[in-house]
Image (tube, rainbow, N blue to C red; front, side, top):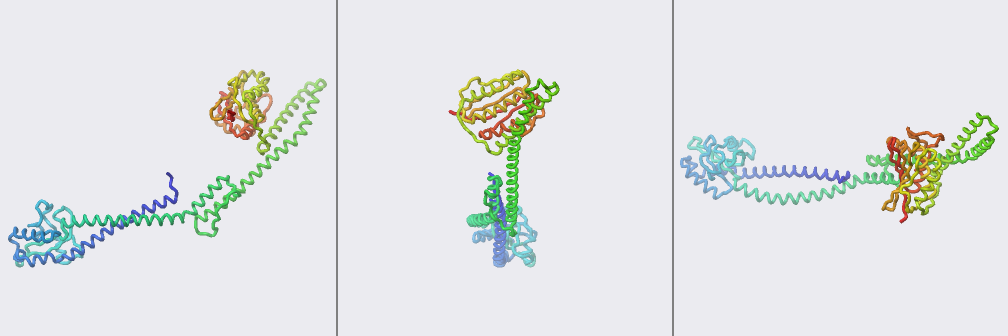
Length: 491
């Protein structure tokens, strides 16, 4: 599914919002954790010192490690959140309050202890966790002396493993609920705001797109569609683009109107010229024919010139007639008279007109199938003109001894196909798209004794357009051509 600019902007901003929210959430979690550890360590900062001062075992110097271990166990029962360790001056663990199997490292760095006891760093200060190889935890610590000699350190993990487990479980559940509620609420709010904002900002773009589509639907005729009025003095780039599009549409509309007007004038001029030429040409042809009737009084050379002149006059008359016909077809001045008739009978009538011409070139004319009861609904006169043009064209480009076939193909979709097929010179594939242009002749076209005007196929195409059908052509050089089109059947 292709997304619009509006949807892409909304999704992009949504992804950015989720990413930023995640970063802020993680950062807030970190700050909250830091604040909690700082307050807990500050609250229990003198815990180790008080235990060391009030307990006789630690006051008199540690000599009975089992008694100290029992003391640690008692204190841990009273305060399950704490873990108690006694370290030698180098940080080696001498005794502790937890099970021996939980100890992962037996030596603690004394640097954080000195920083805490000497107040040389801001809280929170993290010390090594004996239950983990790399983990750090907040602690309370106090030096233990035997007289004036440092015997070791009392090292108390303030937030022990059991405390962290219980607290983390409860906090995770609570924070998950709160986070989900806040996230859902924020996403819903942001989504609504985004829809409103992007709908507002992209509305001019959508309107501009609708204007261009409307212009395209009416063939860029500005007079047939009402476009949005854009502010010419606006700083908004979309409004500026809209003004340019409006000016462009106006210019295109004017150019189209000018082209239509020029085309109309051209068609009228062709029709007028061809009409005006008919009268003097008919008079000229009549005088030449009159002179040719008295050919016995002329010298052989004069008779030759008269024949050439008469042939050229006849060719000129055919050209003017076709120009006049084409001008009327392009000008839409031709009416359609639909009627029902037998298609096969029309094909035989058309073939009959070309029988003598085909016999001179020894070309076989055939209707396939020879008999058919297909009834069609069309303009019989225009269809006959189309078939005559195609058949004349096929005979011109088919060599002596060839074959031209008129083939009817029935269909079950209310149509039948009619094709004119020859085995003549054919047309190259590169030229097939140009053969219906006026005055176009294929590069391998043959030239008979009588020149042809080159308008036959153009007239054929126009006639079939009036009959609401399209002509198709298939051809290969040296293998002939096939012109085909569909006609509506009568059930």
